[in-house]
Image 1: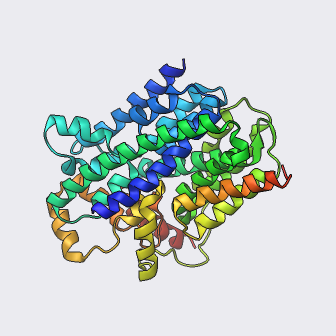
Image 2: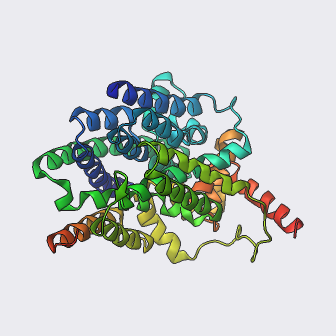
Image 3: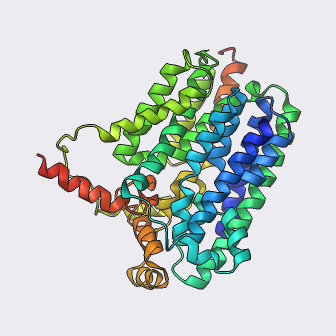
Length: 102
Length: 305
């Protein structure tokens, strides 16, 4: 099941990449679809980020993780490099837990 | 160009490492992150899929991942001429296509250099992404509990950094925030995986009745030079930044010669790509007709006032 899911995702992704390259002259996506695709992507990723930040299973995730993510998000907003964002978020959460805040 | 490649390689090793470590932290078998990084090779979709698979819903993982990667279709239209006309080049080159590669490629005006850029950045990214994944798997296995290292916070923070550039577009921001709120609200009641898919309901925000804009939409003003410079440095490291970093520093004649080299379809895509920093988002810039669509929408908004 697991390997089938990953391979389906891989084949599907490759097909879309190749289709654009091969069908350049023949393929016409509607304006509406062209506009909605990136928005759908942003919505999915934002939802994943929000649930991964706030929830642990079906319960609230506590203090340390959301606090770490908040620090990372602030740095990202200030256009800090990606590596800095990720490391600062992890370090904040780790230090809070070290201090006994869960 | 080599310095750009080195900088982006370093960033990709770091992100790839966080991907590998998170996959292991979720308790997935070691081969999963390796297979994904080689066969799927799309950062955002990999993070998304690993999260949903770990939550026990591989079907949602496939569906969400494919939806996320559907943007490669317009990307392919835009870089088709650059990848090459030979069958072998197209088959291999297509797999190397990512947000960053497309951004770097479209930023290069000269066709010969552009082709070299596509392949250099593409191969560099593929190598560094997989190196990073291996590093992360090794680190994740060695450190035991990922929570003590705060890895659980690193993942959402990284995602936010990826999507932040696209959230500068008002409609995209609205859709994303609404979708995120729906997903969080439904997490307590729906089976794992489904809440994230329900975020697509956020797209309803685009179809809401139009209000009069409080100020005219900014579709023409260029960002200040400082912003462009910084974007060129940091933007390329962010997966979501394709449209924004691409046009930095392009001159008008270069754009014309570049445009002449492309076919009509690719030209339309690239034109929208170039118009991206004009106050609009990377997300809007990625889609070929987004610019025109936005202007048309702005006109109709004003007309309805």
